[in-house]
Image (cartoon, rainbow, N blue to C red; front, top):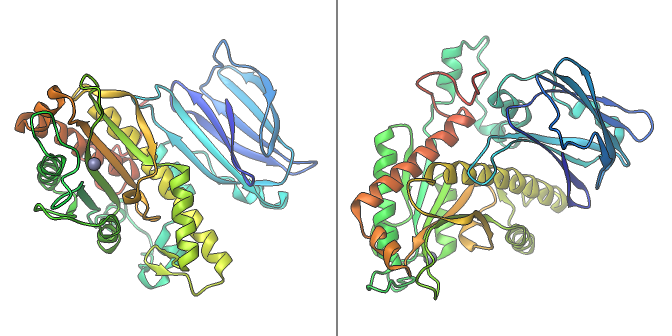
Length: 399
Ligand SMILES: [Zn+2]
């Protein structure tokens, strides 16, 4: 169990486990307040500390075994908070544990109970559905679809069958060739070839609309690339690049999501321009404070989605192509700055390594690594429940 202070008003609680946690949350609002996490089918690891200090909103916690494979963890608060979101994260190449993330945000203690999920969940998909209000319903009444009286499983599936739009961005292009390989390859050429291959893999799956920011050797500004993603109402933006470094022995791919610094820059630029264009709804006309709050909420949700996809992508690429240690990195990349589109930047390989350069030019390597990337995209959307899964076991973990 870990605590992190993500901002003066936000505290993150993380449970690491070697399987999907079955949990139930309760609250006590006497004193400074307390969150009670009841766990079933669980045993504490030998080195798990059964009491400890907290951080941020949390004073500390205590854990107790309450029956055969049952336990309760009480989390004592030291200032008013409510649950902002709960995120169950599956294991990944970078982290072998399942994680259950509970984000607390400053709020009057009276709001704590209402912020808890209403019932016990069986699958990750159910939890995500319960804690993630659909953005359109919340912010843009114009696109709300009238609720059907008693949706059957089929009509519920049909309702989400709009194909997710994936924007594939080939880095550099035209008068900006990017990095050059020792044998003369240009980054802009290999990223375009990879983007075209990824688009083909995705179109073959039949479940996605694919938009390329460029399909020829042309130059595009970063802002243009994220504008294309926004205009296309992208649900995922993936930018393809190739790394370069002086040491020709360094090789391997890596995945970047936006750093906190980049997140702040995006918010600052939006604030300065009064440009709170989130979820396609111009909220700049609203109270600037409200605009800022909505903007930050969109960013936080987007950042978590980007991280989730990054972890899945690394898992699928592992074993298919060499990866750097510490594969999931955070960067301050302009191309990742659209606040409302989950975005990752995939450094395919090191063009400065002769072996990686050969891979980047190999149609066979391109096919297998882009097929793996397409499978990662598919796994991400199936986990979200946004596309129909052949076996109907969306996101669930068999027990
Ligand atoms: Zn690049």
